[in-house]
Amino acid sequence: MHGLPRRVASAILVGLIALSVLFPLAWMAIAGFKGRNEAVRSVFQFFPDVWRFENYAAILSDGPFLKALLVTFLGALVFTAASLTVNTFAAYAFARLDFRGKRFWWLFCITTMFIPGMAVLLTSFLVVAQLGMLNTFAVLVIPGAASAAQMFFFRQFYLGFPMAIEDAALLDGATRWQILLRVFLPQSYAPLVVMGLASYLAYWNAYVWPILTISDPNLVQIMQLLGNFRSERGTDWALLMAGSTIAALPTVLLLLIFQRFIVNGVRIAGLK
Amino acid sequence: MPLAQQQVLEAAVIARGRKRKRKLREDVPKHLRANRTGYLLIAPMVIILAVFVIWPLLNSFYMSAFEISFYKEPKFVGLQFYLYVLTSAEFWKSIGVGLYYAVLVVPTGMLLALFIATFIKSLSKRAASFLKVTVYLPAVVSSVIASQLFIFIYQDHGVANWLLSLINSGPINWLNDPTTALPSVALPGIWLGFGITTLIMLAGLLDIPDSYYESAQLDGAGYFQRMFYITIPLLKNVLLYLLVTGFTLAIQMLDLPLLMTGGGPLGSTTTPNLYIFNAFRDRTPYATSYSLTASLLLFVVIGAVSLLLFRLIRSDKAVDA
Image (cartoon, rainbow over all chains, first blue to last red; front, side):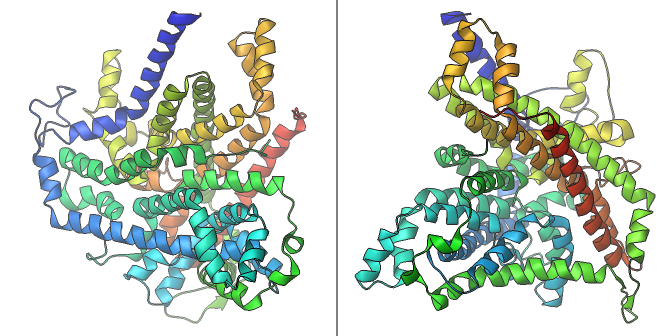
C-alpha cells in the first residue's frame, strides 16, 4: 500500500483508536444529559431523548459537591507547591552541595522508593492518628509531599548545569539560597511543570488516603465524595455521571493545556 | 501518586541511574561544601520521609511481632502472625487473584501499547501528537471515576450488554458473576494504564535507528517480520522493564476492586492489597498486626515473582544493539 490508500487507511485507524479510547469518557458525559431513569432503561438508546442540563445544573448548585471541588482544588494547589518546594530543595542540595553525611541521607531518601505502598499506608495511618492529624488539612498535604522519585528527577536535571554557575555567583557574593531561587528554579520551568502536574493529579485523584483519614464533611475530597455517591444518595446514574464528568474535567483540561510537556516528558534514553 | 505517573518517574529514574554511575562526592568541588545550608535544604524531605515512611515501616516490623489490642499491654508473639498469614487460605487465594489480575492486565496492555506505538511512529507529526495525547487521556482520569463509569457500563441495561445483544448473546451480569467479575475489573485497569505504556514504548522505538527498518524493507521484510526481528529484540530491555513494573503495579491494585466489587462475589476480586485493607479495617482482635504482617509478606511475594520474571526472560540472551 502506498500513497493515498495508505494515508486513508492510517486516518481510519487513527479514528478508530481515538474513538475506542475516548468512548467511555464520551459515554459518561452523554449519560449526564439523560433523565433520571433514562440512563439505564431497558430499551437501549445512545443519545438522550432530549438533551437535559438538569443534572449538570443540579451538580453545579449542589453545596457539598461544590465545597468538595473547592477544598480539593485548594488542597491540590498547596500540595503541589509544598511537594515542589520540598523536592527541589533536597534535589539542589544533593546535586550541587557537599555536606557531611550526604551519602547516608541520599540512600535514606532513595530507599523509600522501593518500600511497598501498602505496608506504609497502614502504619502511616497509625502514625497520623497518634499525632492527632486525622481530619486536618495537614494530613492531606504533608505526608505525601516528599517524593524520592521526584527529588531524583530534579537532581538529575540539576546535575546537568555547569559548575561555573556557582563559581561565578559565589564570587559575586550571592548566597546559595539566592543561587537556587534566582538561577536554578527559573531555569527548570519544564521539569517543574511536569512534576507539578504529577503532584496535582496525585492529589486530585487520591481516594484511599482521604477515606482513611478524613471524615469531617468540611474536608471531604472530591474523589471521596464521588466514591460514596451511590451509597449516600441512592443510584441516580445520570446525576453521578454528570458529577464524574465535572470532576474529571479539570485534569483533562490540564492535560490538554500542558500536553507538550507531558507527552514529551517521557524520555527513556539509556534504558536500553 | 497515580500508578501511571509513578511508572514514568521510575522509568526516568532507572534510565538516568544506569546512565550515570553515582559519584556523589567527586561531583562537587571542595569549595562548595556547605554543611548548614545542605542540612537546611534536605531537612523537610528527610523529616517527612522519616516520620511518614521509614518510621512506619520499622513500626510494621515491630508490630508484626506483637499481639496488640486496646485492652491489654502488647504481648510479644514472635513469628506467630507470619505463621497465621502463611497458613491462611484467604491470603493465598488473594495472591492468586492478584496474579490473575496481572495476567489479564499486563500482557494485554503491552500488546495494545506495542501495536499503537509502532503505528504512531509511522504517522505524520500532527497525527502522532494527536494520538499521543488521546491515548494518554485516560491516565489522568481517577480510578474512582473510572470505576463509577465502568459500573455504569456494566449495568443490566448498560452499554456492555447492548454490545453483546448486537451479536445475539448476553446479557451478562458482569460484576456479580465470579467468572466474569475479575476480567470486568481488569478492563478499566487496562484502559487507565495502557496510554503511559504506549508513550514509554514509543520513546524506546524512536531510539531504534531508521536505517535498520530501511534495509529490512529493502530486503522485503513485512510488518510482522520487522516486528519480530527488529522491534522486539531491540526493545527488549524496555519491554522487560515495563513487564516487571507493570506486574508489580498490577498485583498491588487496590482502588478498582475496592470501588467496583468490594472484593466479591465470593472473594473472586479480592486482590492482595484489598485483602490486607479489609483485614485492617476489620474490627476483629489483632487485625492491625495481622494485616501489617500480610503486607510485609506480600512484598516478599512480589519481590520473588519479579525476580522470577527477570530470570525467565534474561535467561535467553538479550540482543544488544
